[in-house]
Image: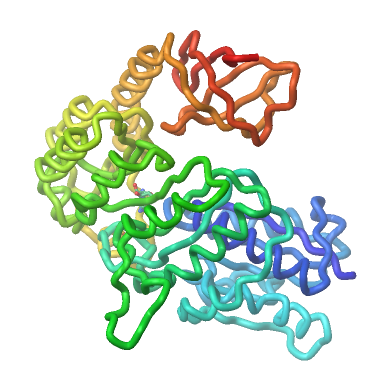
Length: 442
Ligand code: 5AD
Ligand code: SF4
C-alpha cells in the first residue's frame, strides 16, 4: 500500500473537500500516515484567500520532503490561482490540481507512481463532476459539513474566490438531502450547510418534472426539508452575503427550532465609499436595516461578521465608520483581517495601498471594540441555560469544550466522556472567547 501524508489549510470549503479527498484516496487503496517522513506521497491542500499562502507552501514542501517521498501534489485554491507557476518555482512538485478535480487525484498519483508521466496539471473548473463522483465517507463525525453551493459571482474587488472556485453552482436538493440522511444515519447530530455564498442557493427541487423550472429551491426551502430529517439535533449554514438575505430566510429562523438562531453576515466595512469600491452591492444603512428587520422577525437571532481593515485608499475617518458600525451592531463573534492584496484581483492594483503598520493599528482598534462587545455578551449569558454540543477535551483533567447555538465555546467539568453529546449547561462565568458552566440534570 502506498502511504500518503496530507497538510490541510483553509476555510470550511477546503475542510469539506479535503475530507472527501482523503476518503477517495483510502477507497483507492492508499494508506494515510500522520508523519510526513513515513509517506511516499505528500499532498498540500491549501487556501490562499488572505495570505501569501504560496510562499508558505514552498517552504513547507522543502521541510516535509524526505528520502521516502515519491510524489508531491499541490491542490486547492493555491493550485488554482498559481497554476504552472508552481512547477516553475518548485521542481519537486509532480501534480497540480484545482479544487474542482480532487476526485481525480488517486488516478493521477497512480500514473506518476507507474512512471506513465512525471508531471500532471488539472485546474479545470467544472463543478458538477466532482459532486457526482463524491466517495462514500470512511468516518462520520457528530458534526459534519455538507456543501450545498460553490463558487461566487459577486466579484468583490479584494477576493480570489470567483477566480479559484469559479461561477456559482448549486447542488440539486435531492443530492444534499440524500447525503445528509446518510450522515445522520451514521452518527451525525449537527449539520452545517456550507457554500461560498450559501444564501444565494438555487438548487433543483428533489423531484423535477418537465413542467417545473430548474433551480427553484432556495435556502429556506432546503432548510425546512433538512430540519425535518430523523436524528438531526442542530442545523447551521454559512457563509452568507447581506444582499441575498431574504425575508423568507429570516422567517425560517423564527419558526424552526432545529436551526440555530445565529447568522454570519459579513459586512467588511462600515463606510459607503469603501463598500462601493469593494463592489459589495450594499451600503452600511442597508446592511443595518436588514439586521434590524431580522431581529424584529426573530428576536433571538445573534450575528457575527467578517471585517477587512486598510482596504486601498481607506482614510482614518472612513475606518471610524467601521468602528461605529461594529459598536452599533454588537456582534457576538467576529473575524477581522488586514487587507491582503491577492494577485489578479482589482484591489491589488488600486492606487493608495495602506501601509502594513497602519493596517496593524486599525486592526487592533477594531478588535478592541469587537472584544469588548463579545465580553459584554458573554457576561449577559451568566445564569442562563444553554444547549451545548461537546467537541473536545480541555487542557485540564475532566474538562470538556463544546459550542452553544451561537458558536461560543462553553467549558465544563465532567467525569463522563462528553465528546459528541448534547448537554444542557448553566453558565456560571464568562471570559473573552469562552464561557464556563455546569451541566444541569446530572
Ligand atoms: N484580504 C483580507 N481579507 C480578505 N477576505 C477575503 N479576501 C481578503 C483579502 N484579500 C476575508 C473577508 C471574507 C473572509 C472569508 O476573508 O472578510 O469575508
Ligand atoms: Fe469573495 Fe465577495 Fe464572493 Fe464572498 S461574496 S466569496 S468575499 S467575492
